[in-house]
Image (cartoon, rainbow, N blue to C red):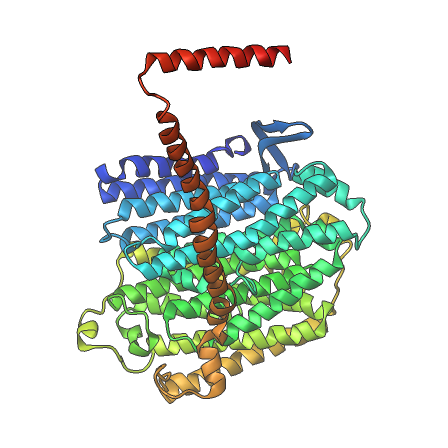
Length: 632
């Protein structure tokens, strides 16, 4: 199967080309079959590669396709690195991606841009696969930029809406800020190590001392790229606005693919971060700040997709917190479980919106569990998983992160528990307001409430099952289980593992699990009391809000602050440059040259008199001047 690895990214690319060129001539059924089929083909090969790696003696393969760039000392082959980390991400991307494609067949069935949508989805998967399969930083960067382009196309898919176009531009531009840091990091890697291939860079880095300044700068520059792509403070504001795209896009971007690119990049570069405690501290602090900041905003949002969006930002913060304390396996584990339950929650939200005829305000929902039972049950499973309820998948990955954080820093653990409590509260607030109580929408909406078609509910059921059993690959020793994922990924993190040793007694781990569980139950009960038992409905934005609630409801006015401090000054500066530099200086020079040529031609034209005697006189004078010049 390893020999067929080149087919994994090629199949989605072929799907994009076929649908992109001939989509309008094909039926929607055929477009959906081709779009989903190529991803299923890639998934089948990815499964084969996974088992070949798992059961084989060799744990790493480098497949060189051709010599890509050769200039001076720089030689970059176009090659793929297949090891446990990349194979796991291949499974996540193609597996969850396939389910999202199948879901999209039903969700987008009435959209006039059906074929264009599937072409974009296939291209997105192609670039994401390229990102995780590359054997060097440049191929990763190509995939990195590619998913940025596709996110722009997908977020602004309904381009007739100006607000959606603005959201797409915001995502694209904000990601470019982070990408500049990533690019500078790659350049510094080449200057330092003479190569950008993972194997060469990491082998040389192992011999460098801990705390090396150059390594720290490289790690921080790479992290700037991760902050943009994975929506960390202060480059997170594009992600909630990305809700402008169709719901399957939200699931694809927020669950398994684009936003986890930053996690993959740092996990892949783990030795660079292990050698830089300063960079790891920055990663951990930014991670926990993002987790708490986004969680507080999620407490007061009323748009079903916005709550999930801020939840994603918060969960990504947890993953970076894990990376910052050296829990690389825990971070990747949470990437996997998060892909399952967050894709489930987004697709479940899409099913709710589909049933409500496009309504996304949870204040206008309520009592939906009796109308859309399959969506209700699967959404509840996703909610329990993200809350970290035993034995759902989120429990195991969240527990592993919090245990490692506790061993590293008790204060960070406290903030992590606080964030977990808020996550549980706002997710069950969302659940109770949507599915419990009385229906609060219009009579027409109630009349049209219906369960989604099988093409939408089957992916929900599959993701719900994965959200239940997904954590079984990482059962900790304290629960008398085997952490299969840690064993599988150990070759990737081997260089870092002996440098970062955190051990907790079983008694301590039991206490930490107990505290987390008690906090979760308390948050669920509190949410139940307010939003189900008392049936309290969130206040409208026009009503008078308490200062703290108003602050959180308005998302700390971060967008407004950026608008005031960055956007408006840049707009004023660009207008000034337009008037002074462009209109007066550049246009003045161009117009001046034109006027000068016109004046000179008009003046010289006067010499063309038509008098032969005058011409002979000028010719003689010219000969005399030439002879005079030659003599002297």
